[in-house]
Image (cartoon, rainbow, N blue to C red; front, side, top):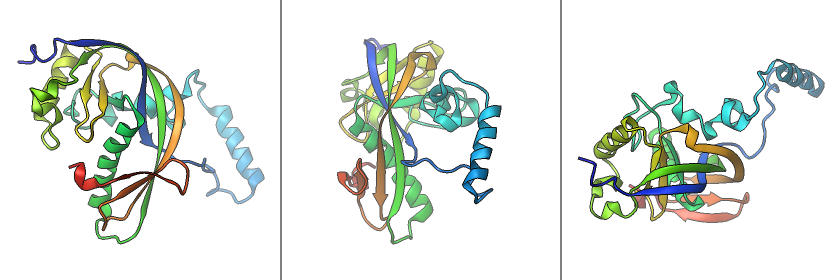
Length: 235
């Protein structure tokens, strides 16, 4: 049933933007165990001495933001998303531009805040870390296909797209390009981690939300508004 839809491919070679949870300032890992900075330094040295070496910590070490690439593909991290039912495979999501990642992540973050703190009348803060990640792969090109198949960008029902993702995974495809359901940007849904490499820091972001207001304020530089998004437009 998908053959007509997936006839177009794109030979993609370039950066894809990945937007994940992160912190602007490094935290002292052992400040809850010792007040003396010297003791904390000893603990850091001991941890470093026993650490398993890694030639690419941004890819492989979870505490060095291994989630940039590998996190969605680890079996116990799987969960249902637009192109995965969460049971047998994971999907790595990115976008072709920074702003699209903000709209996508603001939607999911707003859902989390409203599920947990909907009654709070105060500003809640979320911090994000954004990476450019190289993608070299032939991808199924679904751009503009949403005009004919509206289920590709359905905002609530992922049944069709999850079946499509499973079909492409079974066919050994690398992933796809598709229009965002939250804005006019383009997303990638990568099915094979081998398509990704060379993650690099791009920027940090801060999201600010009062659950009683229809507004998410996004800062790139601390204290300076960059974008304002109305969550009601994302659902």
